[in-house]
Length: 266
View (tube, rainbow, N blue to C red):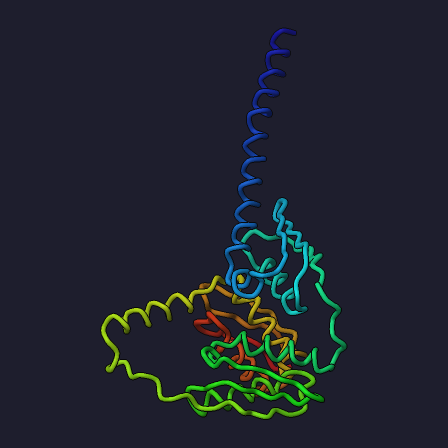
């Protein structure tokens, strides 16, 4: 009887010692998920001014609070869902204001501004957007005619847009690298390298939202994954043109180093 009691006590002691370790491990694991979400590019650049609370329990993430725009809710969801270790996301985020009616000028304005902000080729243009009766007016400064035309192309491909008036002007020629002082050149390169680094979860979220906001690719059932900045696209397309466009749009998303498109013709 004494041996049985000793054995029982030993088992209880082992259980007591092990449980706190497991709880601590799970807690650390969830803390890393919450920290990764807050340190993500999406959170710092698209959600930094929003009232968002992130809680993870055993890999199940709950998002609570409010955001200003509908696309921010989608970005937060996709970013969290693609963090390492996340099993599920319960998105309870609300909007601080009433959602504009679909196809209204306010609705189109939000989508155009968001779409342009996702693409790195729109950097430095300071684009201003106005919408009236479905017609979008763009203003800003482009570094080239190609960049100006691309802005119009992207805006025109947003759902609900009827026409685009492109009033973007060409900026004075940028200072050539050879004309820059050595210290200026180093600073420019350093800034470029910092701006190009994005975490994979943020890249995936931006790529998915980009495809959803462009009218030409919004209907595609695309699976998007990212590994070290290289985005892989899977799913079905109707033709080669759709596949090529998906590659082009995702390739211009911030932080994307390359695109592997394995989408198949349906």
